[in-house]
Length: 525
Image (cartoon, rainbow, N blue to C red; front, side, top):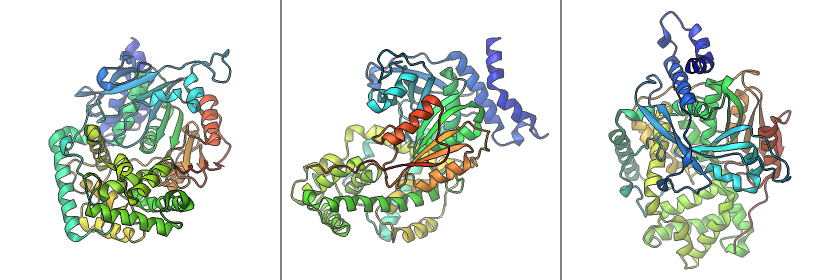
């Protein structure tokens, strides 16, 4: 009787949908079978729950963290078929007010977090409650992280032997020759074949719609009637899918560094926009370095800093640093500076030292860490599978070549590297999903909070504006003139105040608002 009651409560959305199904049967409405499967899986998870205990030694987690697993269907159209296990982590609400030791803070439920990717794990997220900026949230919420399907120990994906994953030193030409392009095409085809060979028929089930469905099963397993969720970067996309699929299941949602959810943007055009935005962020970094020329001696104008960087590229092409760091590794290290301005001092310091004859700092930040090869290979496999499965991609090389040759004329820093990362999608062997048109009308979804840095390169600001337009009753908070990728819980007190007011009190600004930028990083000496 209990299971029936739970099924009825969880199935209200399904019954509404089926009532509108045409005479052709449930399968006449795309996604109805998966919706039914999600309801079945969520009801089952609600009864089973999650048996949290100490984390295994293999997971290498500190003792304050609890770990468990939740089962989800590999294919939601067949909820009684093959099941996979997702690993979940939790730190319980502390109930301790960091500003008043005598006050006991009431628990508000579980706050589930996803850090993005695709391919990133949130298993360490609950430990963030130890940081001062998160203590108020950690007092009221169980902080919950998890590894999405394919990631880590959650039915892991692999596309190649991790022993062959790190290939360094490597080149990274900003104007690749035809022969180099053909070499990369061959590598992309081989990589796509490897994904199919190592994963078999399961490969097609690793995509964003299933990530959103998994999130609802996790919600039910945690015993939550409605979901409180914070997604960063890619996590905002499948969080938005969840909001569109299960609006009545949403309690509060924070979208940090929002991805553009327009179906026409997923994912080929989003990657073009990202490459263009990285050029602007690369310019921001060079301007900052030039401002601190007395410290780094890399040039007192952005153009001179660029010449210093290009000189390092040429030297590394001729003789890789430590036999490990070539132009490709240099580019990868400085791409990270496009994500987080906290990296700026250390990247500038390493480049300066290298050009003055000391390669050790550059090797330290840019050399492949072979011990991390398996984790990095897994992350790339999930990234590729999800993005390739999510939507149609151009299948003719001439389209990629035309669009990116044009873009590279004005945005050479990241354009071709982004192409090589995504090119397996041109030759993908699995069926593609049709992207969901994310839209909710005013009143259909509880108010949600969108956060964005105005100069974010990995998730260009236009994506936050688009998500804001599509989610009725959402409010956008912008960090002006800033570009760090993900701004919640960072050094900006204004941003954090909005996040806390929303998650702790359900309070949002009445309209779009802005916060002043965080302070610029200080140069490292």
